Length: 236
Image (cartoon, rainbow, N blue to C red; front, side):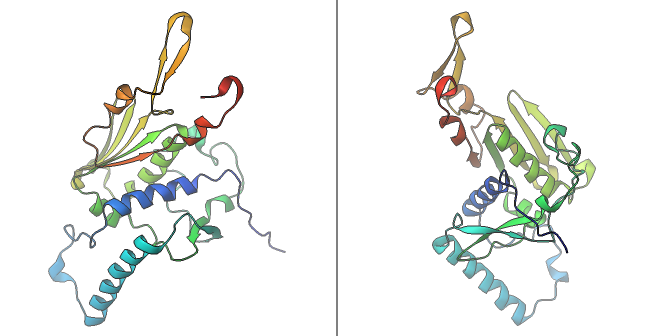
C-alpha cells in the first residue's frame, strides 16, 4: 500500500506565501508584456474575456480572501524549483544532507475562500521590473530569499543575472528587468549593540544601523516574531 504523505511540522513554506502575498498586494497590475512580441499573439474574444475575469477575480480575492485561513494540500506537481539550485546553501539543503524522501517538497497552501495562482517566474519579474524587493530578518527569511531567487533564476540566462553583497545585505540582480531581490540580515530589526565587557544591549528605540540598508527599497518584507517569544536568558 502506498504511504500517505504527511506534512512536516517545521515547514517554512508559509512564510514564503506571505512574501508572495506582500509583493502581489503592492504590485498588482495586468501582466507585463514588455518582453513579448504582442503582434504575434492571436487574441480571441474568449481569451480577452478570460483575462478580464482573471483581473477582476484577483481584485476580489485581494479584498475578500483571508490568505492566512486555509490548509496544506499535497500537490505532486511541486516543487517549483530544482533542489540543485546554486543559491541554496548546504546548511539548509535537506537533500544534500541526506534526507531520502521527497514528499515534504510537494505541499502548497490552499486558502479557504480562494485559489492562489501557480507561481510564474516571468510574470513575477515583469511585476517587479525596475524595482527592489528586500527580505529583512533572520535565517528563516534568508531561506525565503533563497527560495524566491531559485524560483526565478531558471528563466534568466546565466550572463544576465548576478549576485552582489554590501554589509549585511546580499542581492540577486535580474539585469534585463532592472530588478533585484535582496536579503538583509537583521534578526531583531532593532539594534543589538555590544557594550563593555562584551555585554550585548538591545536598543528598542534604535533601528538606524539596520534601516540604512533598506532605504530606496520598493517592497520590504519583515520577519522577526520568533525572537520575541523566548524566556529566561534568551528573552529579547
